[in-house]
Length: 390
Image 1 (cartoon, rainbow, N blue to C red):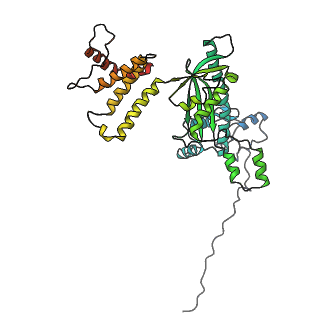
Image 2: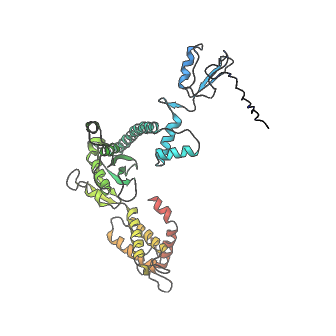
Image 3: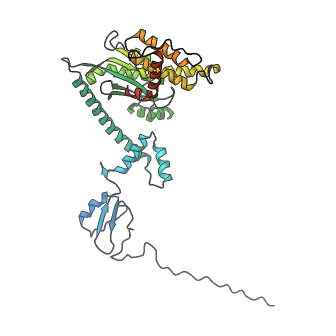
């Protein structure tokens, strides 16, 4: 066999039919799809100038065969911002979540996501609006107190309930606030928000020392307005609220209704003079502490738990009877002591060993001790409604 030449079939060369830069669109065709956003749509100059108003909308319907066009937005706009974005950021703040949680939520639902900058801008706008609305609400609450307590002087004495809250449980939180609620109206008359954390200060501390970093630090306005342990937030916040009460609200908080925490009261009792503020205890918190102390005692002494001993239901009965005794003997210390002792013996009695000798006679004339105990038992069935009433 001879060496035959191999015949290699050459590939057929593809014919060039043009590309996107060489194709000429017809007069009636459009290079832009109908589902493109308004920022990508190029309006031909042949259209009327009135179409320019649709450049600010999210979507534009445009027929390529006629002159019909219609623009619309995906949501209502407020201050040139889509309302759906503002509501989304506000909703995340309401449930205590931030940008990262919102980013994950939109990613899971396959929805468009806001950038970090846009999210922060919406937060800042909401913050300014909420601050303004809350201040107007507290001013209206102050005006109601001025009407309820008319006086010749411009300063009105009233009572407030002061309580603080932290962002985290325990005393490791860097953020917290203290609120003052009017006892007469139940509305907030003042609030103090405190934070020991500033993100910009933390950023500056990590920057290498240079002229640029020093200039940046000099122009920086620190967002931190509190230094110290989270344990002191309530006391410091209450002090600030009391010190500016006359100048800011025209009120003198002469009565302090606390939850048993004496640190806040100690810091404000001499605000308007020596012992010028009187403290009143909340009966609900006192009643709650009785149950908390008994449960703590039972956890430390295992011999107290079990059937016929210091059970949870027994603690609840003692706690409820204690609250009734306090509310029924306001200003009567001896009566309070007698009722508390009677409640202890009454709850500890049994059929084999009755201990109703301390139980007082009921309000019904001629009622015996046993009848009074039956009345007391019937009252415990409606104890929740009784507590809600007070």
